[in-house]
Length: 89
Image (cartoon, rainbow, N blue to C red):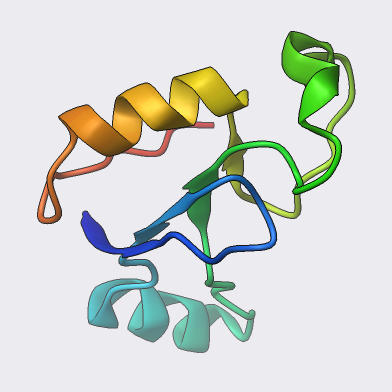
């Protein structure tokens, strides 16, 4: 779920996703792998917002969900903390 907001992010706003859960951590431990973490839905890196939708042509995040700045503004305003998030491969 969205558990907090980061207005002072390195990106144009960011919404933190509450991952990994205790269940995810236990599963990763059993498999001997790192569950990861610090997953966010965020805008474009500060200072290069002009790239807009062009950011979609390369995978430039490390596991985050990147959207352009107008999109993160819309999501930020519409989605309250506590909203469930489903991440699919």
